[in-house]
Length: 323
Image (cartoon, rainbow, N blue to C red; front, side):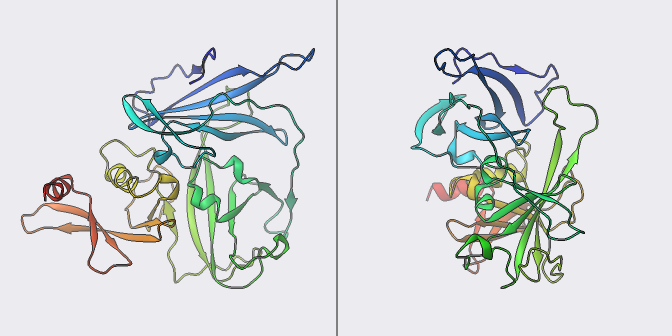
């Protein structure tokens, strides 16, 4: 995938981690007598199932941010890489890959947009959507405009379908939702040299009374939902089983698994309550069903078709396939 590129990784044991993180330099094409420049590549390697994701690290406003360039499995990536997908095999798994892993980045000017809606919210910095591709599901990146606060937490403000120009964003038209990404930074210093701190992101969808961006009026009649990460779920867990099942209906970039549990820590165990597939306009509510023989089955009941459900039981699916 990256010929003539030496990749480096942590010396720590990564065998029990959901993915391995590697970095390396690729030389940019030479331009005449100019000095050689390089592009920093960041590679994420997941082993269950095997997926390789390649990012370029780009300097933007004196900060280093990721841009997604390649995935070995489009159905399991959180963003659909531009370009025509093509078949590829990684770890013995044949899948549709997308993007070009060998792309490079040339230095260019960057434009930083900040705003201060009021003194309580402080100064917010706009985060272009391209820097969130592959980090959170694409259906959320497309639905919200993201601003980073002074405490480094990120707020996504819903884009109304009624907007005709950018100046109308944030008008008080109807109730909406807000996406809040709370960063829990790890202790210790950064040894990578990029002035970054490792952090866990807690992604929550909060119901608001109105859509005005200066408003902090939370709708207490609707629950706060916490997004669950299918990609980092342990092998064999219920979340991983549901995620792999739903990836047959649509790419994971268009799959949202929410919990209604009160979550304060990104590593906290919680329930699976609501599943949304916005592109195919389907939603489900997860239920734990105890059958007559005492066994427990987890079912995804359709919110659109009463009485119909998807079974997560492998035995049930095997029986259906034999019909």
